[in-house]
Image (cartoon, rainbow, N blue to C red; front, side, top):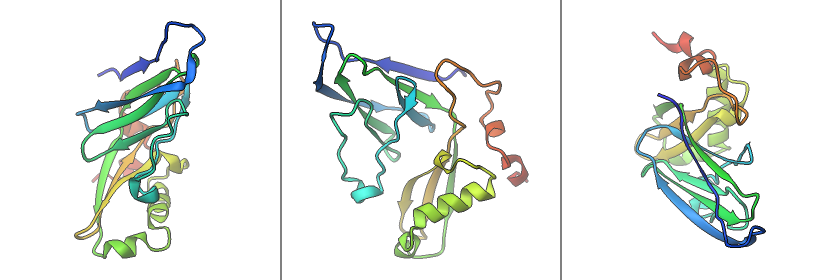
Amino acid sequence: MPPVDMTLKLQKRTPEGNASDWIIVKLYYPRPNSIRVQVNGVTIKPISLFEDNGLTPLNTSECGSNKFFYQNYTIHFVVTGDPNCQVRVSLTNTIQLTARFDMPIADFFKDNGVTRFINRMAALLKINDTSRVKVVGVFSGSTVVQTQILPPAVPLGTSTASTNPSTDISGLQSLQA
């Protein structure tokens, strides 16, 4: 299936626009994939739900400021009135991983647990770019960590030779039994 994407721009009656005008767009995406938000070909890093207990608001003065919510499959992002604010939202192929640890959740978060988990997972999968590994949820019980592994970034307007996401994850085939 070809990638699904959309481009949004807030326009006013005057061509110069006004950067102080903004809207927050909330989208539901029912497929268990990852969303990539780009502004003028540059990927905008989402606000982490782990920083400030997920209470950090979207920056309404920053075109493309975004936050995604894995549990209800929604993404919230900002489109400003700046004429150069053109937000592109793409659905990308990812690999999702859920890991269970027999440990209290507080122990997981001790000593930069999320960063350590990402670094170790990237090393295990032989992924050099740790920004491709995202922890999208941590839940108590036996500590459950939900993770997404993104394909390498592709510049706007280019395509990859492969449409199979597993070939973009180096080392993954060695983990399959």
